[in-house]
Amino acid sequence: MIKATRAVTPSLAHIHGLWRSPTRITTSLVRGCRGSRGLPVVIAPHGMLDPGALRYSRWKKRLVWRLWEHQALVVASCLQALGQAELVAIRSLGLAGPVALISNGVGLPDLERPQLPPPWMQMVPEGERVLLFLGRFHAKKGLVPLLEAWHSLAAEARRQGWWLVVVGFGDQGQLAACLAREPIERCLVLGPCFGAEKEACLASASAFVLPSFSEGLPMAALEAMSWALPCLLSPACNLPDSISAGAAWSVQPQPADLAARIQDLMALPDTEAAAMGRKGRALVAEKFSWSTIAHQCAELYGWILGGGTPPAFVDLGKARS
Image (tube, rainbow, N blue to C red):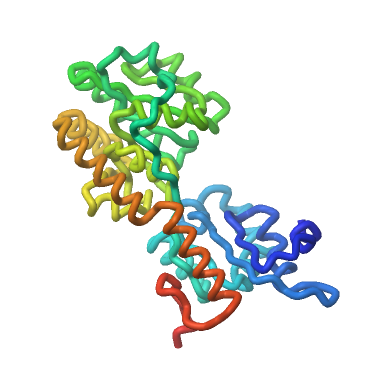
């Protein structure tokens, strides 16, 4: 990987994610070898330094942190934080170098474009509504409290004409097998959907839920808002702007709070739900569009390579003093 990277003679490397080979070679890239010029490196942890994320595979991460991960983050020219919460997590680990606050980006879909039928079309009666979970099946995503909450709302969901549809993968089919043995009324667990099939899910859903315990900045939530879906998001999704903009409701990843919020959502008039969706789409267009993110990245790279005044979104850490 080191040879392949140097072979294309890049001006800068932007590494996404931790605990894998790219950060293992960071120090070698930065320092160069045998007369080669060192390479400026930006590292985006993507939430992998958050306290909740560090609790998973803790002992392995502690070992890797000592072997190379900490050093990679120290020698990087700049780190990228997806939001203020991630900046706080980075600083809490004693990392004092520059950190750029640059969010994830998504495209803004054409809501008028014809879509494929959703994968639940044969199972959900026409005219009934879908609360969509779309993402990786992992404990940190809050699926267990979500399913417990939905189970407690069976009568209300039947009366209001709502379904919970869980779309994704990552648990080797354990969730689907569990619900096959002990079904939850009006709850469907489907496999992963990509491309046009994923768009069909987002276009046909009525609302979106992500009650995570730990996230960086979830793409699924941004995509749901880009499709003008009202959202239920936990604080760990790190999207406070969606709450303040009226595009989403904050929900704790606990069964009782989830049940109360979902019940409120079911009772929400269509006009108010549509208004929430429009606010989410406007928020994505303003702060999370690819044009905005690309411009910030270009500005960051220019500063790292050329010096001068740092962009306004760069926190200099101890370099301030």
